[in-house]
Length: 442
Image (cartoon, rainbow, N blue to C red; front, top):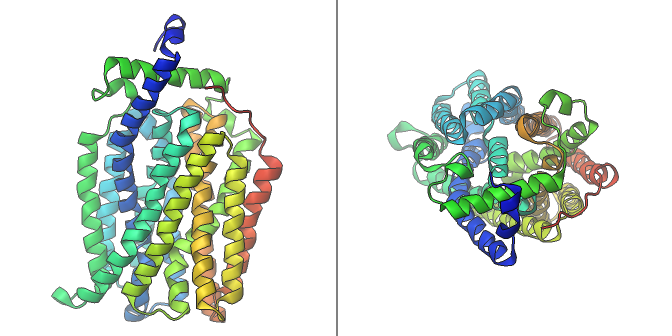
């Protein structure tokens, strides 16, 4: 680490301009690859939202069976996410992410052979076990490379991959289901799981050889560039002041539980849109899987733009509360519109669905600025994973609730009212309870 005597000359204006170039180099090296991994993870996680369009009829399952299977993924997340993130800090990112990526790819492939709800539940739980730690692990990993005042942009770029996965995954799943159904005696939904699982296994192997754990180990940076980054990260640590390093001690702080509750509300909406977005499109009259895929693709393309723009704008203004809270409010209002017009206007429903995806997904990268303001070290590794794992129980509950309501009432509208009410709570909690933080000096 650079000494205090070395810091002053390193952070003059020419060096600051040089530092911008170094961070661009880091972004181009890391973010596209991490985005690729997240695209693959997201596709393998949510492709059941598309394959359910035919799988449920073929296997004679109810919406309640699907909702429970979609959500039980997050129970695996809950039990294994914190240990996975602590392991990442101990053994490094590339080993941890390699294990995660290969595991979820193999599990996704195995899901093509399910014939009973029990098999479906077991493999969805196992998929959650393997993927546990990936998302919070990347959040933690990026804190090793970017200071707080550059992080929202990096988070937004990385997390936009989930929206791009929707852009790619929908049409891909629809094309596979339409064109490969019956080939080799397999249904179209089985081919989706096979074709979309294999790339994850291959990407997991590539991860070990491509990723670098820490800036000081980056041989693709010059010694001068490594020094600039290390000095800037030290500047950031000093600007943030004293933060909690002990995970156990951080659990006694009410702020971490407040953030868990906020993220719970956001994830309830996000998971509902993820697993029931294609169903909503089908409900308003589009039954061809390929057409459903293209409609969802357009909605997620807008979601990607919203995530990236909100992250850039948050970084530029060094503000996260309003950026997160207003995005969540847009998601909530749009879900309410969907529920009101689901049986009346396809155009309004599809427009509102797009805005709900933009708002809900746009809130996520900016949210992750908040925990890193007061957690560091082991507390950051465990705290980020704890927030994500507990909050993602909403990902278990919301789809299950929607499935039960759809089975019992024949309509998704009552469940969407509940999800909209839950998401608006995120806005209220952020704006009333999360403290305003002063802008850090660059």
